[in-house]
Image 1 (cartoon, rainbow over the protein chains, first blue to last red):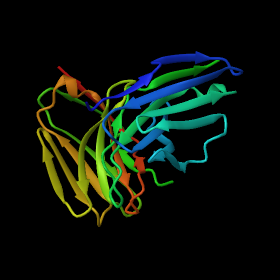
Image 2: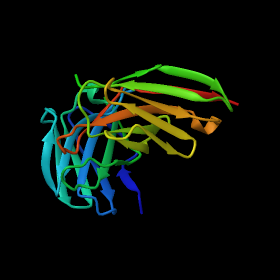
Image 3: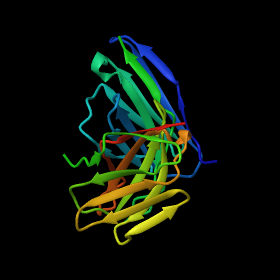
Image 4: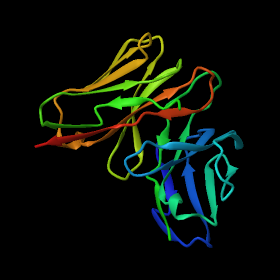
Length: 115
Length: 112
């Protein structure tokens, strides 16, 4: 199984709402990622989890809160977002031996609209 | 910014023609990867070329890497309408961190 799944596919939320994005993989990968992608732009890295621990935070505002409950799951908790946070949020996973960077497997994304 | 630049930004060709897109980057790398993204969907990994490799093939794809010029190219031969997508190069730093920096992308349109 080389699939990364993400739920929901679409999400519309108000600026005062709290919501969560979910990501799951069963490839035994120990590195998982959140990216944000605006229209016609490349993905921008937000967070990296290695062995269920946060290893990279690309100076993301605290209204985005990642969580990795176990090696297969990755969540992104959203609170008090702004309209400019509307974007496609992509989850990815990869193998994680040290000293190499492997290809990443991406989920289909969650299209988030903040009203 | 570490972000790579890709050119052209957009490319429109007919089925059967070859498509070439180029990527330039700024720092030393461990490897360079190419991804495809269909409209509004997740990215699909196409090919990975390591810093000590100069050329790599996979099916109709040919990737070259010139580390002295900090550049790479992706050639798609005998293109098909199904190849219509955005193509991104992504560079991995040599430090072993699990971080990719994506280029600006090339939007390819293949017309029947």
